Length: 145
Image 1: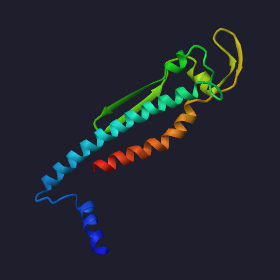
Image 2 (image 1 turned 45 degrees about the vertical axis):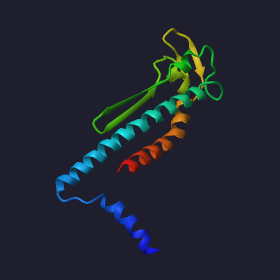
Image 3 (image 1 turned 180 degrees about the vertical axis):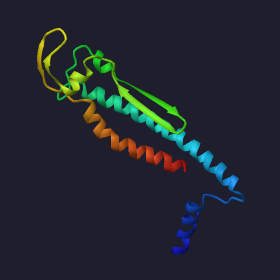
Image 4 (image 1 turned 90 degrees about the vertical axis):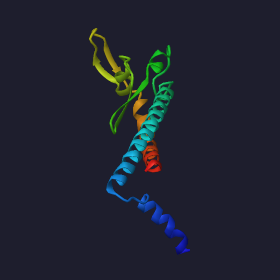
């Protein structure tokens, strides 16, 4: 049994046979680029899945009710990469986004009085998808390295 497990352990630890440090560096560079590309793909899928969940949460109670569907449709994701850094942004440009998520008590710019309770839809989606995205990114990178 122990003899069968050793080749797998050696294969995972060594990463190959290299005659010169530059060969090792080139192999790490290739694996690193592949890992970043795979992580970017995972991030894009995760960001789109988060948008879908936010839209679902914004489709009625306990989130905001749907009146025209424009607010729900305004949610979008954008993933950008600069070298090894990948950033995903999920959000809306709709002016009511913050008010619906966090509520509003007070007087608005037109002098109207409000005591609007929050209808969280982004926060619960991030809480649910955050750990899943971290796990997917870890899996994607470990497969490439």
